[in-house]
Every structure is written in structure tokens, then in C-alpha cells.
Length: 219
Image 1 (cartoon, rainbow, N blue to C red):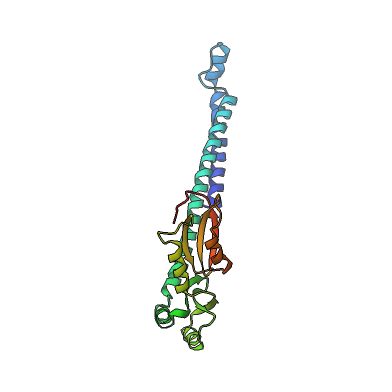
Image 2: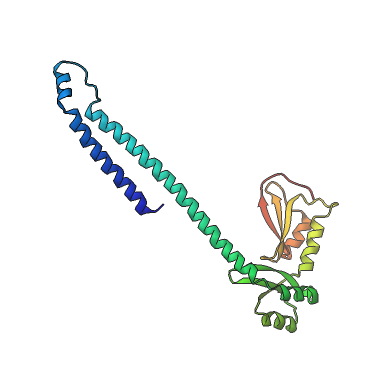
């Protein structure tokens, strides 16, 4: 539905309202109703003012319902278009996924590999600041974006293993590796305090805290 269609419907309803009003007034003033009034008998038809009020009320209800439905349909269409655009962008990124270069970096330069993430321009490979020049040349020759990070993927995985070990009790709700921030993101209940052992990692910027609400899970 468009604004033009909405306008056409509203104008059409108003025109129909005018035509029906004219027809009814014409019928109402016919001789039979004048005779009924003269005889003191109740007219068979409702009064013109009552008819106008009733028809106006019905017209407003119809127009309001139409506008509501039109707004719902329009919002659904906007959401559908946004999802299509997002999916097209995702498909384009997925199509350009640098599988070969990613495998080479992971397998041959694992100590310097810090994971990867996506940006509007595509995939970004993360490497540590002590990465050798030949690794940088390898990535740049593949026309893949890259950036320096503090910690390698192995270091982040190690922190994850420590935080999720069964014999530890940090009172965290969840944790995961966030390659965009090159850290392990930990969710802690707003009613809890940060465990001193976690604070050490926070000070090193390898752990970030997300304060949240919910059921606390020990782990």
C-alpha cells in the first residue's frame, strides 16, 4: 500500500458518503413520508440527521481500520526489505570469505592469529602486534583486510577454558570470545561483585564485563 492508494480510498469513501446522503435526502422527502408526517404516524425511515451521524461513524471506523491495516502491511514490507538488504550484504560477505588465506594464517601462523570478524568492507583478519612481515605480506597479497590486536586466538581460548572450568566458581552467567574487541566477554549479574581472579584479566584488557540480569550460574 502507498500513500496514493490511501488517499484514493479516503476520497472514494467521502464521495460515496456525499452521494448516499443526497439519495437518502431525496427519498426521505418523497411524498409518502410527507403523508406519514401529516397523518401523525412515525416515519418508516430514520431521520436524516441520524442517518448522517450513523454513516459518518461507520465511515470513520472503515477509514481508521483501513489506515491501521495499511500501516501494519507497510511496516511488514519495510522489515522485509530491510531483511532482504541485510541478507544480500551477508551473502556478499560470505561469497568473498577468504577461506584459503584464513587457513594459511591459522595453520602456519597460529601464534600470531587473533581470529577474524566482519565489517562493512568484508572480513578482517586479526593478527598480534609481533606478527612477522611475511605474514602481513601474505594477507595483503590476498586483498584481505587485517588489523593488529593484543591477544592471539590461542590466548583467548586459554582464558575461556579457565573461566568455564568445572572446578572454578566465578559466579558468571556466561562468557564468549568477542573477536571485535579481542577479548573474552563475561556476563555478570548486577547483584554480584567481580571475582578478584577475573579482575586480573580485566586489568590486562583480555576480559571485558557485561553487567546483566537473570539467573546466576556458577562456573
